[in-house]
Length: 226
Image (tube, rainbow, N blue to C red):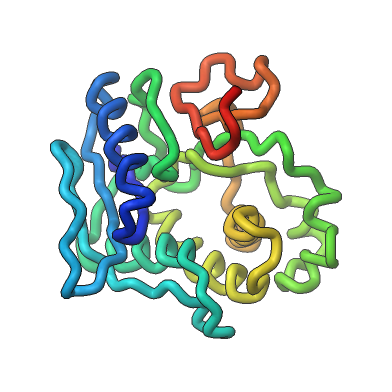
């Protein structure tokens, strides 16, 4: 299992990566921890005890509008890594603000990804501002969009297949929806490619109901911790 985090090289996220790495090691997570760092050649790469750091080309900007959008580095970093290293197997896609509380040992096969159930997402969320039409989804495809988000487990074949549509969707949505922009773009891209997820508790978000955390091996602390 490739546990993968994608960041730029700013100090802001490095402490998060160090904490994630600490918990990855503590629970004995099998496989390799890979940190894809979008980092200019003149900048020093982040350093870790256990994670392997891969330098990727920084993008930082929406390729269509030219506006600054640092999160898009994730998509191009993944695409570059898949193309240049040709890894094969299960990718556990993480945000740096995640911590393990137990290991994930089951891999996934091509065409059978597993994802965190996005409990805040509803069909009404997709209909907001006529998203299906803007993303080129016909009614049948729009209805097949799943409540899937990361952390998620996906085979490298499926990830490579869905990335072009994911990138295209992100550029269409421009700067709307804040941090949910990538999530809407991802779920729509998967529906367009006919990729269906098994949904469950993979990595729950802080602020979700207590019962949603039952059995989740990862905590995603992107919201306030009380």
